[in-house]
Amino acid sequence: MNYLFLDKLKMWWNIMSKSSCIIYYTSNLESPEFENKIIKGINEVKGDLPVISVSQKPLDFGTNICVGNVGYSYLNAFRQILLGCKLAKTDFVVMAESDCLYPKTGYFDFKPIDLNTIYTYTNVWILLNIKGRHRFYKKEQTHGSLIYGREYLIKLLEKSLDGLPIWTTEKIPFKFYTKKDKFTEFTSENPIVNVITCVNGRKGSKFVDIEPVKELPYWGNGRILKQRLFTWQVEYTNVNQCLKRLREKFQNWREHYGK
Image (cartoon, rainbow, N blue to C red):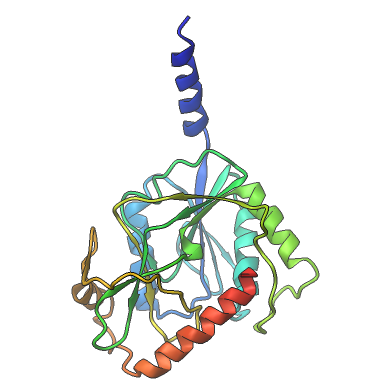
């Protein structure tokens, strides 16, 4: 008997039998024109993955949970994710955010195996909606590029949010990851692009010390991509105000993630 073949067959079945769904969470603070382009892009590349969207306004995207106008905060965002995870029935949940552009291959078609591992897609770049800034900046991480075992994430969220308000717009720090959590990186040549609009108070970002680039695989030129995304509005012109907001939000990110 060919045991090597059986081992490979078992491994293949272990991968292919695991189910995933997308958890799309949004505070609906982005302009409808912009967010509609994000949603359209996800629909075009998600393949057969089902979507659970958790929003603060009714949303025609997959199976929708509308929590009402509870306002934006990290705590509220994580509460929304928790609701989506509890509704889902799949083995894994794939995070998707309302300010991220996703490629056709590399992220949504990835096949995770370990239900107790946090999978993080490392090829993430930032595009700033600032006048005259058309380059892409390498980003350290975004929560919209993570894949979890569904039950594992539910336990993480319930433990982190225990004893905290159900909904609040206050900046309440809470620990999320611990040293015991296992992370596994995965990537492809096709980046996820986190678009920072600077108009909605969402989190800032930490840039990796890599030279910004004018073009990225799959997405092409940054200036042209911005024209496609923001034909309906004028670019954010107050560079100093935008960068200040980015620094403030990055500090909040560090507090909330316990780093």
